[in-house]
Image (cartoon, rainbow, N blue to C red; front, top):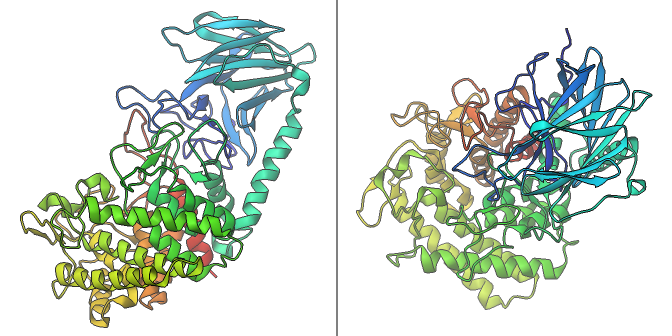
Amino acid sequence: MLKPNCFIDLLDTPMGRRNSYLCFANANEGGSQFGKNTLYLATCKSGGSGMVDLMRPNTCRQIKLELFKHGQKLPTVIDTTESEVILRSDAGSIRFCIAGTSLVYAKGTDGLALKLSTTATFFGTSVDLGGGQWKFNFGEGMARFLPFTGTVTPLPMGSFMAVPDEKGELFLGIEEHLLDMNKADLAGYPGYEEAVDTLQKEFDAFCDSLYPSLPAEFEPMRKQALFTTWSLMVGKDGVFVYQHNMVKMMRFVFESCFGWQQAMQAIWLSKDIRLAWDVLMSGFDIQDENGRIADAVSHKSGMGGSMKPPFQGVALKWLMENRDLSSIPVEDKKFVYDRMKKWLDFFYTFRDLDGDGIWENQSPLETGWEDAAYFYVGFPLASPDMNAYTVIMMDALAALGRTIGVPEEECAALSARADELTKKIIDMFWNGERWVAVNPTTGAKADSLSLPLFCALILGKRLPQDIIDKTVDFIFGGNGFATPFGFSSESVNSPYFHHGFTAGSVIIPAQLILCLALEACGREDLAKEMGLRYARTLRDNGMFHIINALDGSGERGLVAFGEKQLFWSAWASSGYLFFADRYGK
């Protein structure tokens, strides 16, 4: 009986390619054992919003791929390498490669036929373009079959059979299009092996530019983490909304680039400083006239009705203090300064309802901690962590401004505002022993055992030493957040603890924020200890962005938007690389 050989298991994450919206996926409820899998070619543009349509099942899987011989379907396993997906049976295999941003290849030499069952729609049609090429509906657009070797024959119910030539060889292209197309000139396409080689070289170059190696204990998952991040990257292509390099969160369920995640990615990708700065800039590409930047950016949408925490200032400050920015053009630095300054002003114009200089969130979605326990006091809700991010943004803008010719009085004013806001944060949110959140309308204070409140530690040495010491003691105390697997978003001893996203799971933003905060307070020893715990958890369990705080396992089982499980996340995979490299040496 055949057993799969996987670089990445498609049950963990579909396999794609940088700047492509095509990927290979297993069935929604598929298995990896011999005969229990179903391979699909998917398009990540289905659904249109970047997160799949909330009113219908996920429609990303567009073409079911099955091996046949002598009219009989064959049981298979799915193998994967860094550059190919292989559908393998006892009678032979067909290999697949994403040959370009809109092109997939299939190649077989064992006399096998490939059945391609397209997703049926009410208006589903197929059109003979001539020369054995067929055009058919594909997600939001169309696709055509390109029979380089062998023939393609239509079957009932929107299916096709690709049959090998008399030598038993099959070489088929599947090309995605958003605009109408006619028959293609097959002479202009690269060969299969050339396409595989090109893909492999692109991936290898990405690996070498960022993390060509990791400390020995983390090396076994280095390439898988790099592939997860690389394959979820998109950039400017003249067709969709992206203007700079961005990193999507996850396949299918959260197929979008989220604002504060780009700021974190800028830190994690900063060994290639031009790439990192480009990613930092991308967070400001979609900004409304009030200064609010987009929460989720998908291929053709942007603003939505929400936002995420203003973490961009933390990223900017970290890059200025830890990386050489001399290669970044002045105009790119000015772009970040001007857009970030407008983003900063947004909070004090549109989120400080009582005008006290402390801004408030108006919904859970704005916080980045969507189901956190401290929300029980209601909204508007002022919290120490959110205001701390804007303190650091003021500091970062002042520092950047001085390098690009901003008048000193403007920079000094930013620094003074940061000093004033720091004092207000302490006065409002520190109760002498711990951090709380406040509903300014009712005066109610939230004192749940919620980690986000303690992210105020990101202020570092701006805080008095006794507050730093008490905060660190609380974090690592009996009702704190340190687990063997990383920081839990809610204390496991809290009456509000449950296995949600931010109400008791180990999640990547909590790890980065608190590790950077501990470093800023001079506790590099604790940052290293917790960063390594988390990196080891991902190494052993996979790049899941929600980790069970009690046993360290990846939380696969969330049913969301028609998907039966969560896949690996670039949010986690990039964090893995950063922590393993930074703390594992």
